[in-house]
Length: 203
Ligand SMILES: NC(=O)c1ccc[n+]([C@@H]2O[C@H](COP(=O)([O-])OP(=O)(O)OC[C@H]3O[C@@H](n4cnc5c(N)ncnc54)[C@H](OP(=O)(O)O)[C@@H]3O)[C@@H](O)[C@H]2O)c1
View (cartoon, rainbow, N blue to C red):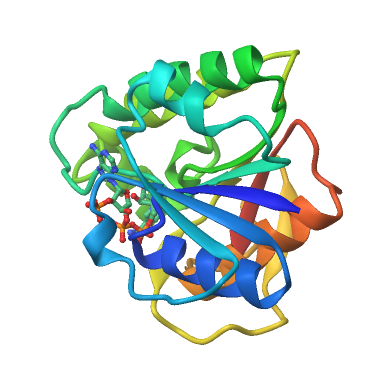
């Protein structure tokens, strides 16, 4: 496959590059900071650009089979960046005729939460929910083959084969490793089993 990775310099993104190239895919990392890419592979092409601009995304997209996004701003303040990104990506994908994308969001967007989730949704992470929801809504177009990936708290733990996946809910478990999220995304891109689904992932 030809895979376009967004957020490739981040924690999940680095695993996406490593696993996708190791599995024989041709990978493009579309990044604002190319100097942060450490991986060397003949299957990896690094393209500098701004993923908030639909025109730039539409330039890089043609020829790819799937988009894998682990993009996300690190601020806890109220921003609209994820929503803007979703609108730009969906428009660029429709224009380019590349319909398939997997996009990382957050388990905090699930309405159903345990006591800790409810507390976090109302306090520390309250500003993230509207922006993540806007990103998801922008991606959930009939013309697109989207999968929204909602992990709970991310860890730097190892890749295990025993993580749980569920459509429309968070499986039991409060954490998942970045490596496991990347593993799920690559395998789902290779063999779609969660098309047009919101997927909860946990350890
Ligand atoms: N942390 C958690 O526990 C948790 C839980 C659930 C969901 N999530 C979601 O999962 C996402 C991915 O996690 P992660 O640990 O891989 O995140 P990360 O290490 O912070 O990586 C975020 C990526 O997004 C890029 N990015 C941020 N703002 C950007 C902008 N304005 N323009 C272009 N690129 C931008 C970063 O690029 P640069 O390297 O250039 O900054 C980086 O590649 C998070 O951002 C969050 O939305 C996180």
